[in-house]
Amino acid sequence: MKTFIGLGSNLGDREATIRLALDDLARLPESKLTRASSLYDTEPMGESRQPRFLNAVAELETELSPARLLWNLKLVEKRLGRVRTTRWGPRTIDLDLLLYGDEVVSEPGLEVPHPEMLKRSFVLVPLVELEPACVHPVTGQTLLHHLSLLDQRPLVRQGRLWS
Image (tube, rainbow, N blue to C red; front, side):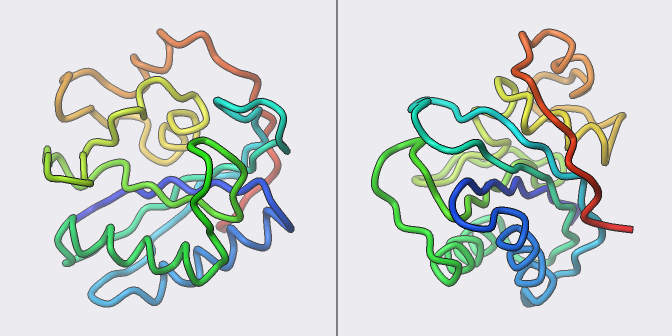
């Protein structure tokens, strides 16, 4: 199943942490990391008195179920020092399951597509970079269309993760 994972970091060496997360994604069982977007430097959401984020999106082919994939993402976060304290607060790494093919999943602790993705240019810009014609499985509209409707927060492209 083609999935998309959002990556974000605003503590420590942000780029190095995102690269380590990509290495861990590449080692997930029954999965293959196929590509990653550029890096984008972005303003924080929520609590604004914190460092800027570095964000990206990775494409992963996986045979893992959505719940099992999310479990593995949480393990990667923990391994890379993620400590959950304040919602939308600073973090070494944040991994979000954005899309799982065209499936819609609603389970305790798991919503796919990610319920906030259409409000976030730091998710949509790198996702559209990877998959310009991607259609949101609930709205039936392209992500490019949804991106055009956003009052976009400034994003600064920081270079490629993938060649």
